[in-house]
Image 1: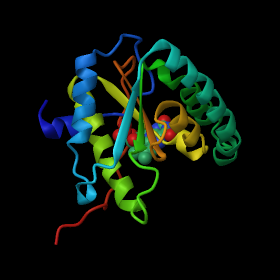
Image 2 (image 1 turned 90 degrees about the vertical axis):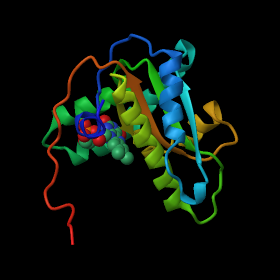
Image 3 (image 1 turned 90 degrees about the horizontal axis):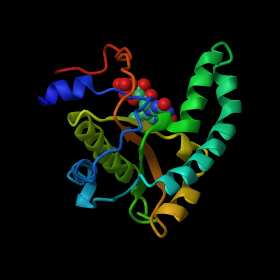
Length: 192
Ligand SMILES: Cc1cc2nc3c(=O)[nH]c(=O)nc-3n(C[C@H](O)[C@H](O)[C@H](O)COP(=O)(O)O)c2cc1C
């Protein structure tokens, strides 16, 4: 896919087919992440792709708790839009039925005072992952819900013991539904 078309047509998808993702595709997608630029070339990321049925089931139990913890604040924030609360919590609970979850961690528990540049570097790697997946006809959604609910350390200890904090979770799979592109705001850049 041409680069511009890939960037503009990628969408966050919240409903997936159960069709598995091949090992080769998964490998190439994760490898694309590792080719991102990183501050001081630290390559401060560690990815865990979960696709075994047993581990996905463990994740489901955890995401159930994430949804329960987030629901009260979502209800308060979207008091006039119960459908948004319902849609958001349902997605957190079932992760859209995605056959693969990618957990993104910092590689080390401590990068001293470099938190921003570490997070930016991992963000760059995640965008590579999203675009590489889209290029293969696969869909993704980048989530921070499990990070916000402080359940990241539990996930780290289960899936990446000894590594640093959880930065994001990405769902991956073949899309079951198209998504409409959310409007982009005007005036977010200038050319001088
Ligand atoms: C850092 C980050 C955190 C996000 N967290 C969530 C999330 O917790 N739940 C969710 O459904 N989408 C999440 N998203 C996806 C955004 O909602 C989505 O990217 C945005 O609405 C624009 O839509 P698009 O990706 O289809 O262009 C997140 C995206 C980013 C970059």
